[in-house]
Length: 545
Image (cartoon, rainbow, N blue to C red; front, side, top):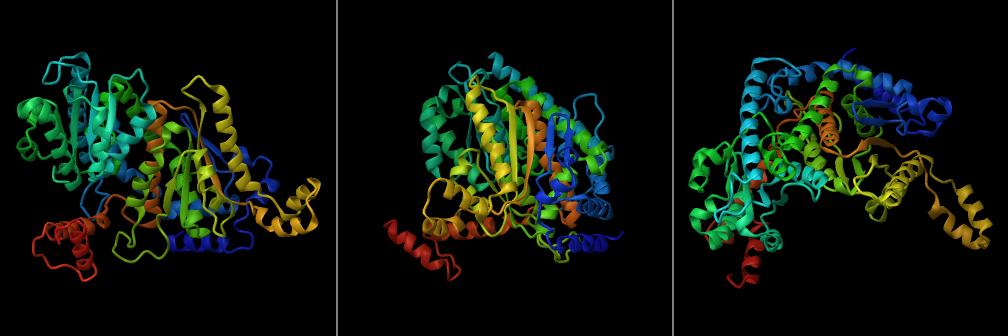
């Protein structure tokens, strides 16, 4: 079957009356929950609350075969140049292959990436252990207790998400993250730090990222105020490939940890970009994080399409976006430790999949990546869940549940899980107007009041969600979860025929900011007629216009 024929078959199924209905699928198949639930390692994926019936599932799998998702997967894991617009491989999976183990796929690029990854990982381990055992100390001879990661985008979101999820009071160091060039962020962080015991990582592949280098200069100045210029240098580490620029900043080559340009920022938490995470958690825990991702890599490579979790998650997205026309998806982790996970997925998915042209440069004929947003449950229930339950356009939801908490308060956790399961059930079953009227009448409401209020209390139901269940949250299970979504992105790239590994859309704003900055500084620089009046007014409000 050709891709066009497969898409046409899927479109025909989506156009059937009742194509978005979910509840009838349960009535037709009492075994549906078991049939639509799949496992990989510690990850359980329940797709039963989607409008994917047997015929739709078959059509989606036909589409996966027609677009050669498996071939794209194999090329990715071999190290082929799947990032065609930049002529690069996408070799993030090489970063989590343990020493002595074969990669999930074999090829010359993968072999080179493995050698670099292992060399860098060995240096990271040596450095991390030296910091923890006190062999490496600050300028005053004190042990480092805090690490600040200065980065933005993929140099911040992945490490921040993982540190937020995995750090406990028993961990060897406290991790902090500084991303926004808005100096209010630094002013808020600074009082929590002692310069004599703070290690600073400057995470920028090129060592030219404007926001990162501006913040790095602020923090280096703060260190120098207490420790002097020479002392400040002993507190600095670079996560970069630009040795010359790092040296000019005062960071010697032995304190620079690089990573390949075949690893995109949003896929880089497994690389030197994860050094802050290793310092915060300890090296053994960082290795367990890598091992969890490796386990998902092996599942992705070996599982058949119909039982392959990344493939199935991607196919559900295709059905929701292209079949049913849903332009957004919510991610609701019912675990406070995963508070930053939706933000990580926003970059991972929206930067990868927000594309308007196919690999051959032709316009995409259908929707691609949806808007991704989220918040931890139960916070979301008191925020945007009103829209998800009752807006005219359904919003699919990923519910992420953790069976066993990392605290000693079982009553709180039972209530948390009850709320997550209840939201998934409510989205499915809804509430009819007849049920609302009966409930109000039983409570003694007057008929006029029932007529007035009943329509507002109707929930249509048949709103899709997926449930991802982990037994507990630790480095290994989090590694599996993050890699699951990474591979989902790769599958969607194949299904939509787009390149999920470039991000040209972020470049224009950077270029324009560099052009606008001189005007804000008072230099004569011609500006767009929509921007020039705002610059003039800003300078006037600053008293310098």
